[in-house]
Amino acid sequence: MVNRFILNETSFFGPGARQELPEAIRRLGKSKPLIVTDKGLLQFGVAAMVTDVLDKAGIPYTIFSDVKPNPTVSNVNAGIKAFKETGADMLVAIGGGSSIDTAKAVGIVVANPEFADIVSLEGCAPTKHKSVPIIALPTTAGTAAETTINYVIIDEQKQKKMVCVDPNDIPAVAIIDAELMYSLPAGLTAATGMDALTHAIEGYITKAAWELSDMFEIEAIRMISRHLPVAVSDPRNPEGRNGMAVAQYVAGMAFSNVGLGLVHGMAHPLGSLFDIPHGVANAVLLPTVMEFNKPCCVEKYGKIAEAMGVNISGMTPDEAAQAAVDAVKALSARVGIPARLSDLGIKEADVEPLSLQAIEDVCTPGNPREVALDDIRALYSSLL
Image (tube, rainbow, N blue to C red; front, side, top):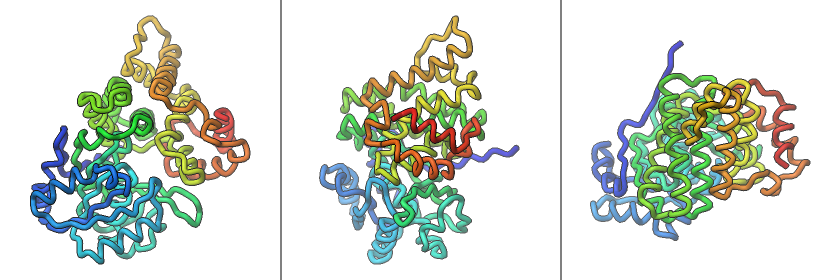
């Protein structure tokens, strides 16, 4: 079996790393970026922390901020239009997964105009050319979109999240600057942090996992368990923020290359049909799906428990595996994540449309335990 690993060409880490942006643009041989961000980051001055660096360096840019929390085909088309009209030659994405995913889709279509129908990019699209160069600066510690070969766009007509997997979409440069995350509210810090934990756990147990991905994911689990409570309770704590910024990137390096599983397969419909934030959906689902998968993952669950600080000496393998599930539940509760889907307004009548989308989701086949439609129905219902 041949395993593949795709990473950014260059990444910068540490508080203040955004100062590397002008030189990174020059090294790419570009000079006129389109900034892709959202209106909230403009309003609260986060985007300005980056654009001020460009202003000081004398690099002209245009801002595109028509990005939704769950980006749509329409958002992407508007971004493509802005890129062409402004004469941009590259993209700088500032934000969470929404801004970075929008930039990826824009960059892919500009470089591969035969895929102008965004819906044609769903799954593993056979694009021939690398995206227009993207430099990604995440403002949340969760999605790791800055280092993955995936992006998620909502098809408004089908009310469905399209997961697009394309090695050509990975940003050329990732700049992981924890100072861009200091103003993130506690609730969003918790949700995005639990998204990162879900990436790490699913990437660790997915069918395609192997030694290299395991190394990254178990370290990400350890770091998230340590740093997430600090980042939530003390948002301006440099150690907590930078720890989470690095941890979510580490998780992303691996899951991008080995895939995810049923938690994401079930979370995507919650976002597309009910606009539930992705990190919250993952966090609510994660312990329950872990219970479902436990028979296939006993040994690895024991290692997860250890990484989360549980002393498993004297435990049987099954007890250690259950300790991992309990540790995830405890962390989720500690950072204020709701325990049930019913807390988010989901009702029994919603189970069927959710299940029908989840069984078809591109992430579901990566689950370590085979899953049928009735299993998914039962898992959703158990959380009401």
